[in-house]
Amino acid sequence: MREIDQLAMKASQDEEIFEQLTHRYESHIRAVASSVRHNFVTKSDDEWSIALEAFHTAVQTYDMEKGSFLSYADLVMKRKLIDYSRKQGKYDQEEIVDPYLFESDSRSQDENDGALQSEVSRQVAITSLSMEEDRQSIALEINAISGILSGYGFSFMELTEVSPHAEKTRKACAKAVNYILQSPVLAKEMRRSKQLPIKIIEKNEKLPRKILERHRKYIIAAVEILSGEYPNLAEYLHFIRKEADI
Image (cartoon, rainbow, N blue to C red; front, side, top):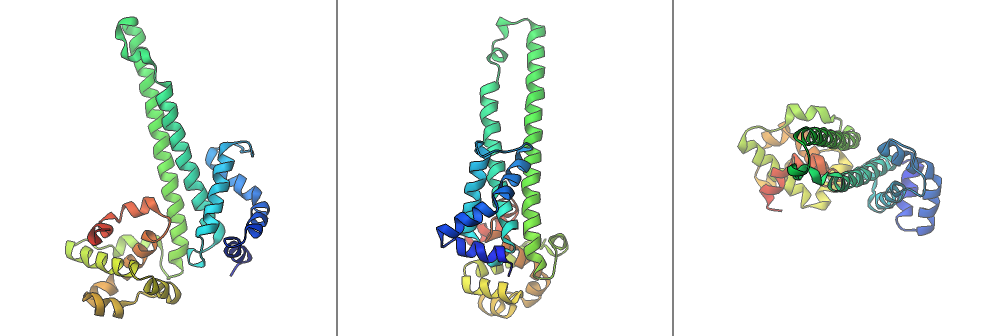
């Protein structure tokens, strides 16, 4: 186990150690905030406070099964900062809209056309920024979950080859995933052994062994995503939660 990972585990229970950890990685926290803002962040900026709070959240929610602490902390911080950026964008959008756009009688047609064109251009820019932030957030999650899946001996990109397509198979996989999610002891053992407990699932859920073996990687990945900090990726697995009515 890396020293930083051990320190983070201790920091979750000891405020003094947390302060030491924060001081030690102050530059790293600021660098993460600056990378999301695309500009230098100082301690007087909101982004610093948000990144620091997210770092604290990462310490409190970290465990060794999440992989490297710093990778996990970066994911939590960047997601919080991106959420903040989106909220600020929404606020700016509400404040900037020109009221004359809705008052055609007060301007000439050319003025209105010009104002409308400017507003449309601005809205396109806002939409493009939002899309870019979405891509960045998803990329962060893929990078983080890839580190977890590598421990099982496969990559995130392999999931396209092992994802279930038939409705019956999808439901069987969802049932297997939910069974593990609802059994913390079984999930812990899966992470320890780096193996899907096929025999236990087959026996208790009466699921075909062939399906469990063929979609082993998909089931493992779904368990890790739905039990971790991956809200964007979890959206693609919403049908699994729906199958369990949770």
